[in-house]
Length: 107
Image (tube, rainbow, N blue to C red; front, side, top):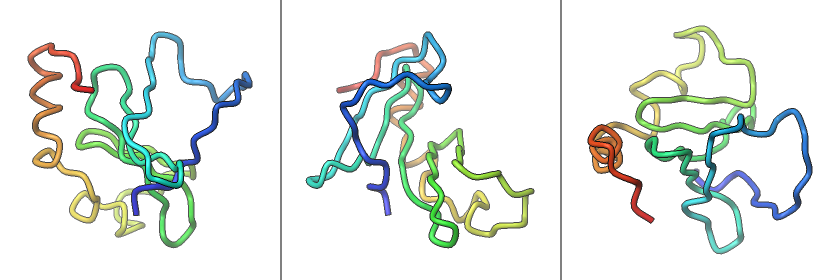
């Protein structure tokens, strides 16, 4: 359930562009070209997926949860509860330690 954001090489400017000063890098893609993992600056990577009920996009790391749909109040969507999310600190421990010690991300 990770490969859900389409990779595009088109360069169009829109209000949904990342804030200046943030460096976005596709870290991992699937054979079909869909993005699985995105590196933003030196933070732990965001893992991309889709919500199985509303089909909205989700990007999560061990520290952050971003949704393309209005975030429901805590406890209103069990799939977004901390214990149900796919990414934990243990999964990204190397990236967390590299960030905390000021090292550049690998790759």
